Length: 372
Image (tube, rainbow, N blue to C red; front, side, top):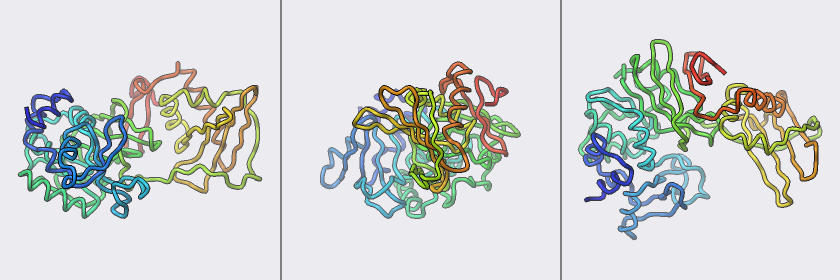
C-alpha cells in the first residue's frame, strides 16, 4: 500500500475518489517549505530538503499546510507574520466537501479558490479536465497552481480573478466547489449553476463560526442545510475587521441585566445563527479574568468605529453591568435573540438551513418556509 492509499484508507475514501487521489498525488501540490497544521494538533514547519521524511509524512497526513501569509507579504512559517492567506486544505475536510459535492461523470464544475491546485486536479481526474474551471485571485498562486497541475498531467481552465464573479463564460455549471469561507453566498454562483445543481461552500458570516453548507439550486435561488463546522480562510473580498475596543466610554450607557452572560455564551452556535438572522453584523466573544469574573464583548463586524457593548459577570452578584455605546444597543439585540432562541426550544445548528436569493442569504428553521 503506497502513501496515497494509506491516506485514503485512514480517511475512509474509496471508489471514484480513490481513483482520483491516485491520479493526483498530493506531494506534487505541496511546496518544499510550509507550516503543517494537523487536525487537533500543534502546527510545525516542514522542509523537504532538510527533513524529507517529515515533509512526506506531513503531506500524507490529515494536515492542512499553510503556504502563504498576508497575501505574500509574510513568512508562511511565522505565525507572527500575520494571518494565513493560502494553504492546501487538510484531506479530511477536503474530501468531505468533495463527497458532499458529489459530481457525476462529465459534470461541469466551477471551483472558487485554486490554491495549490490539488482539488482542481482531483476534480479533473473525476469529471475530466475540460469540465473544470478554477478561479484564483492571487496571480502568483495561480501561476504556481498551473505549474503543479501540469506536472500532474492536468490542464483545467485556470482563471485569474475575484471568485465572487464566478466565470460566466463556461456556465451553466452542475457543481460549484468553494475552498474559501464566505460571509454570504454570491448570487452570481447561483445564476451560473443550472437548476438542480449543487454548491458546497464554507459559510462563515461571523468569522470564526464557519459551517460547511450544501445548497441545491432552483431557477430563482438555492436552498440547503449545514454539514458540520468548517474553518477556512475568508474569500479576500469578504474579509472584514474584527475589533472590540472601548471608545467614547464617557458617552456609553450603563445599565444592568439579570441575564447571566455566561448563559448566553454557553448557548453556542445555535444562538449564534439566530443572531445572524435577527441582528445582522452583531458578533461577540468571551473574556475570562484571573479573579474568576467573565465578560461578553459585543461589536459590529467590519466597523471598528461602530457600536460596542460589554456585559460583565462577577461572582456573588445578582445583577450584571451592561455598557453600550453607539447607534445600536447590541446587548439589547442579543438579549432579544436569546429570548427568540429559548422560545423556539434552543435549536442547534442541525435545525437551521440557508436560502440564497438575489436579495441575500436568509436563515430558516426546520424547513425553508419557516424563515427566521
